[in-house]
Image 1 (spheres, rainbow, N blue to C red):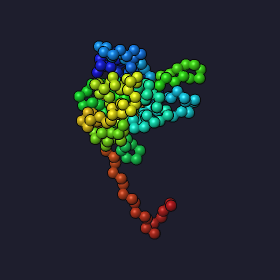
Image 2: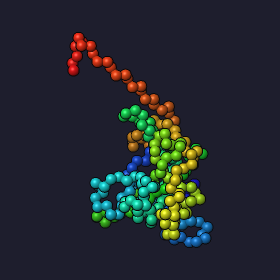
Image 3: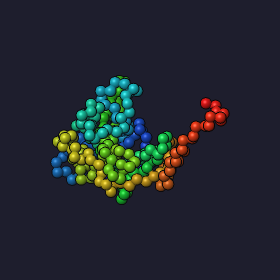
Image 4: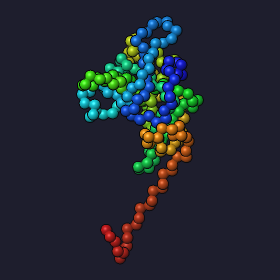
Length: 236
């Protein structure tokens, strides 16, 4: 799928965290009708969207995701939905399922047939007060399909190869004309593999993070203790 996206070879990364750079693909500057090869460009952006009108990035919330259902209406994402739709190539994503009160089980969610997929994304170039510019981005999410819903209620929007051009075409395709692409992936598209909690630490970046492990089983809740008898000593 890299060939379809026209992305040059890129080193594998196994644990990307918010605010770190991610690779995105956008439509190129020249769109020639009937061209044999689509005009596209790739660039690294900060994972954490900053709208152009934000005044203080230190206090502005970290926007790593955008809800597909409301992105067209939200002030933060409205312009990017119209002018800067992007694709984020990935081999999968991590998601966490709550397991007990304070623990969660991480899962590596990948296409069942392997390979690289393209998540729907938005890109914005933010101009800092000092004059420097930073490219930022967010991933669009939608309701989880049946394979993922037991882990989390949301999942990234996957754009299929035959829809790349329509999604990236911000010149002739308005947001309302690509809404149909922002839907959950088909039920058998992904598989969820339980992995260790090593992925919870950004410093861990090896491929072993995606090795299957047996998911932790929540300890049974202890029955409530009976109140002490009246003649027993008690500290409380």
